Length: 215
Image 1 (cartoon, rainbow, N blue to C red):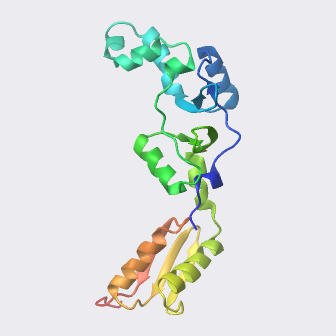
Image 2 (spheres, helix red, strand yellow):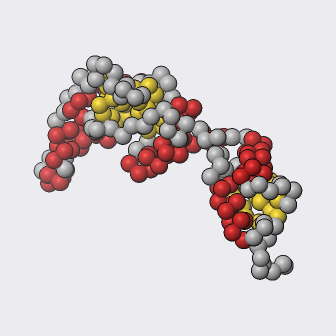
Image 3 (cartoon, one colour):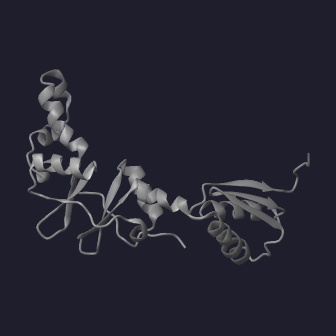
C-alpha cells in the first residue's frame, strides 16, 4: 500500500502570522533552521508561503541600486519593499491534503521547484508540512518488506502466477528479477509494476525473453 502525506508529514508545524515582521521572520528562520514558513491568517488558514528567496529580495534591491535593481521583476520590487509576511509571501500557496499519495507530493514539489508543502485539511487549516526529506523517507523500507510485496502482492496476486519461476532478490531497495515470463509482454508488465512499488530504487531486469541468445 502506498504511503500518504499524513504518514510522513512533519508535525507540529512552525508557521508565521500574516502580520509577522521582517525581523521576526528572519529570527524564526534562524532559530528553527528552516528556509520557508507557511503564512496563516488569524483563523489558522494557509494564505501563502514566505521563503528565504522572498526575504533576499530586500537585500539584493537595497545593495544593488541602478541597473541591477531595474532588472528585478516588478513583483520582486514589491517584495523588496515589504515589511510583513503578508507583503513578502508567495500567494496563493501550493498545498496538499493529508490523504494524498506521497508520490503526488513529490511530483508537485518537482513541478513547482519547491522544497516543502504545507499540508491542509478540508477547511484550509494548516495541519502539517511535508518536505523533500519526508518524501524520500519512503526509500527507507526494509528490503525484506519490499521483497514480500513483490512476491506476494505483485507476482502471485496481480499476475496470478506462481512465484517459483521468478527469482527475486532485493538489496538496498534494488530489485533483481530473474526467470522466464509467459511471454515478453508479461515480463515487461511485471517489471513496470515492480518499479512502482514504494521503496524500490530500481529494477534490474534479468528475465529471459523470447529470442534472447544465451552467452
